[in-house]
Amino acid sequence: MSVLAGAKSETGQQAAKSLYRQLLRQGEQFASYNFREYAKRRTRDAFREHKDVKDSREIQELMQKGLKELQSMKRQTVVSQFFQLDRLVVEGGKSGKQGGRRNDIVRQKDTGWD
Image 1 (spheres, rainbow, N blue to C red):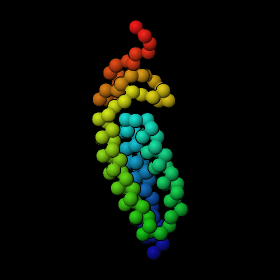
Image 2 (image 1 turned 45 degrees about the vertical axis):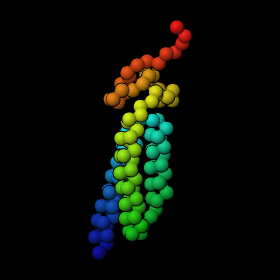
Image 3 (image 1 turned 30 degrees about the vertical axis):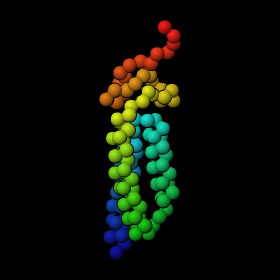
Image 4 (image 1 turned 180 degrees about the vertical axis):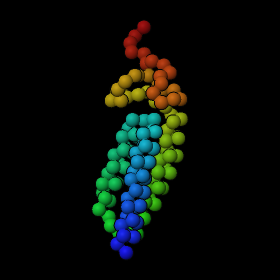
């Protein structure tokens, strides 16, 4: 019986790790730096908060909640791609408005008077 329980917990751990990675990857798809950082922070905090949960029913509920959050994040990232903004200074690298592909610049910002 303990072997079966061990296999179930390993499968559950793998599913939780997979969900964690999916949430982090999806969070990187946000166009806005602040949303990307918030998604990363929220995902890490939620998983740290519930790392010691042992009850299988509660684990299932948390996994379902995580999957709902993932679906919501997927919709939000699609919407955020419609509203591309100038990169922030904290993001580093190039400045200007991003185009359709990741990290390409359509125009440079005017930095002074003509």
